[in-house]
Image 1 (tube, one colour):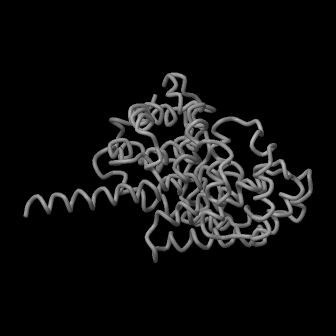
Image 2 (tube, one colour):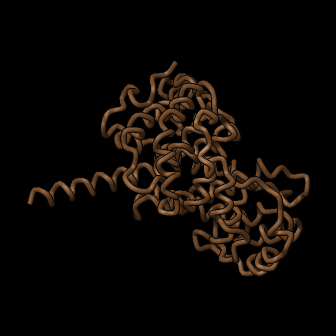
Image 3 (cartoon, one colour):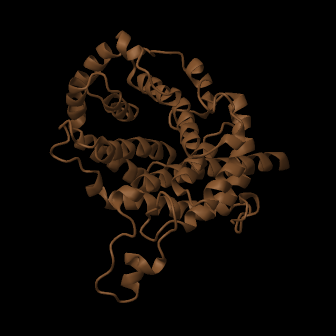
Length: 345
């Protein structure tokens, strides 16, 4: 059994700030080095193409790098790399024309719209797509598509980003989610955990507008994120741990420094030297990584310890959560220093 995050080894004040720069640099570097995994296949428009292994990874790359770009300092290597990856993803969708073709073929599907919204939130636009999307989003069918509440919040946030009229009231939809109902904390498990994290991502515009989070939900999350994250670490749920740490960094007001200091060393320890983080399960031995093999003089180093589809999401999420946490903790420390200096004058 793992030690609870409140007393985890290395969980002392400032520990998160000591590991986060390297975690962010390595995870984002892994994504940059593995662009080939995000390249769309020639038959991406074929109805039989698997969206979850083609368009979904590319859309997540664009979305999470948008927040990373907004959370890192201009001129920093991470800021530059995030911007380059967004440009790469935009090129893959042919400046939005590919998404327009998808929307024409599947006007009832929300995913082309949501992927486009990731780019629109960054300022990348396609006039033809928005003209068709505006007409579709005004239909009765669009407004009454049946879906889970947290997924509907994602569509509402996408409408907000694109600039279309919202098809439903976000507050009413939020109240129907697992998180919005302040569900009994002991009911937390994998599916509800992911529903919870994405509810937060959608209401805070991917953690960039924390002030949209209602006070009651903020208090609930501050109380229960520590045991939930501890449980995820104990069960080796690295991907969900990363998403919950992003949520922790998206809380309005002072960041939960004790939680971040306690949990980040554990997630950092799960990261391979290449920067990759597995979604779940035991982590690869350092002896099995290409870097370790090379350092031992092995002329034929082994490939990355995890298949692309088994680690791309958790690695992106780790970079996303690290950028958010680093920004919040650095700003909090600077504010505290300023306050202490002012009090001493």
